[in-house]
Amino acid sequence: MALSDQEILSGLGDIIEEIAGVPAADVTPEKSFVDDLDIDSLSMVEIAVAAQDQFGVEIPDDELKNLKTVKDVVVYVQGKGVSA
Amino acid sequence: MSTSVVVTGLGATTPLGGDVASTWSALLAGRSGVKSLDVDWAKDLPVKIAATIAVEPSEVLPRHRLRRLDRCQQFALIAAHEAWRDAGFAFGDDESAEGFRVDSERLGAVVSSGIGGIITTLDSYDTLREKGWKRVSPFAVPMLMPNGAAGQVSIEFGARAGAHALASACASSAEAIGYAIDMIRNGRADIVIAGGTEAAIHQLNLAAFASMRAMSTRNDEPERASRPYDKNRDGFVLGEGSGIVILESEEHARARGARIYGVAAGVGYSADANDIVQNDAAGMAKAMDRALTDAGLKPSDVVHINAHGTSTPIGDIGEIKAIGKAFGDVAGKIAVTSTKSMTGHLLGGTGAVESIATLLALRDGLVPPTINIDDLDDEVDLDIVQGEPRKLAGGPAAALNNSFGFGGHNVCVAFRRHES
Image 1 (tube, one colour):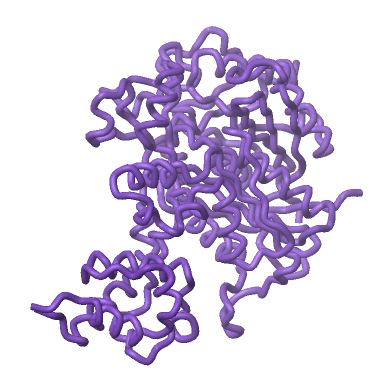
Image 2 (image 1 turned 90 degrees about the vertical axis):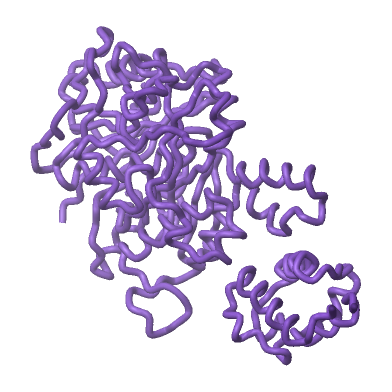
């Protein structure tokens, strides 16, 4: 069963809260990691690893660098996710 | 005439308490911070005791900060925050924050560790072997590097004059204080956050020290295991924690109306150039002589020595002889104590924590006891404080803090009461 965008967003919010201390409620689709959430490149690596654990979707380095906003990650995970 | 350096803030997290006040009151009360290691990994070790931190960093720092700081760095930041607040400085970018605003360019950070982020090193290696390289934290390198605590403290408080981390094993944080004194005397900084930290309670380190037969195996009586100067001492007890002092030029401190704990009067160094693990009485005595000279003190000015006294059969006596040599006729008049009897040995953190104890002994006129002396070693011919804390007379007085490290490093820091 594929995850909904909302489920992915919610999971991502928890991950970002754990890793960067940003409250999950502040993790909204339009937010930029660097400019809005103050998340650096090392934290992005951690987020990618946690996302892989959570959603079963690997994000290779050369794709990760193109994911600038929360929405970019949701779309990426949604695109690679397994559907029933 | 060199710049006078004073101490204007104190911070600590130790096996006796999560701050300076609780640590100091435990020291005066003669309480031990040594506990049984109730963990699987200690089951097969000959040493099953350690002085673990009294307040876990997870009770103080938020989770997202903890995960990218080695334990030794967590301790250092906690202690540094206490010292910073204690000195009355404003923290953070908010212009309206309470306290004196420090000039970043005139602020230094000197935070040592004996071994740095070794717990991160070992845990990361386990992760690498069990789960592969992608699971090693991207923060592993800044966490494990020995200068990590110095870097983190510099970033946290905006210390731009310089960030330094000296490594000299058990003398590391005394060296940090010595280096910081010189930073101020040389005009490189007006204020320096100085001290040390250690978090090395791990199976490997206990095994390695145990292999040297350097540690106490009094596992059935943890609180009685650290017993400097007692006939039945059998080695040191490993402890963890951090001590941080704020050093400031006296001129700067007076101008802002700071509360002054005491004067960091001087520091003396020597290197034994002899044995890699056994320090030399002659070398220790030289460090004390040089500290007195640097501080402009006479031997008779010294009323108290916070000894290195780790509770090892040979090391304890070496230092006693060294004090006798350095002080001659007046050695017997000095109140000597080893607070390691209560805190255990904090390795790279010990010099700073014990400097704090030395300053507070002068401030309060009370020297904490050396606990667990049931039977004083016959070779100890000095006045070791036992039982009740020893009252010191008022008036001008100086005290020394000794730290000696594997590698033959001998460091003695001299403090004196501030006359206002």
